[in-house]
Length: 181
Image 1 (spheres, rainbow, N blue to C red):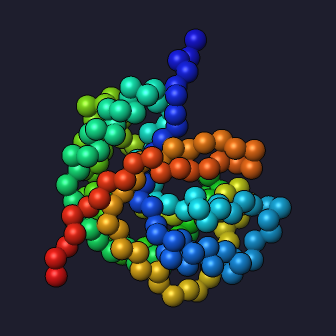
Image 2: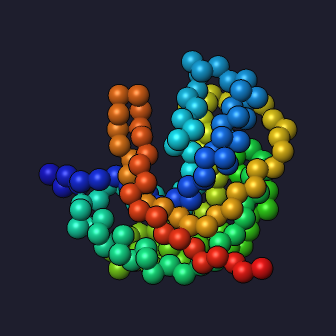
Image 3: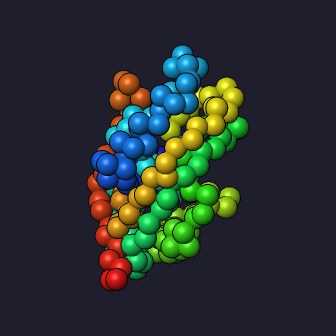
């Protein structure tokens, strides 16, 4: 019998309201039929660093503790492109030039979580913000002004099933070191 776990979690970059709203403002431009896809709610927009999945409260405490050991500096992401993952039928926003600090942060976090029996994803890290699911084909290309996102921390998020789908709730915040100019 499979062990029942207590919570479903992931680590992510969490945009502030201004960045989140700029991304959500792009949704109508894709001209997608809402019967043929599902846009994420603006409050759920994020960039996943590590999907953990279902864990016990004990495992959760280990992950929370080890995530505090990540040392990294804040950085800026320029959201300036869109893409489509065919197999999961997913429309996403991303950056054409990934700042070196982003994969470095993702890697450091993964290393910190290893003592918690965490097994990092084997596929290469492809940073993106999912915006619509269950598309049957790629969306039309939309031109938009780049969205500048200052990343000054990462979060631990719980995924909760609700009648309307899922709701993401930040349960911990981990600040990054501020870059001094």
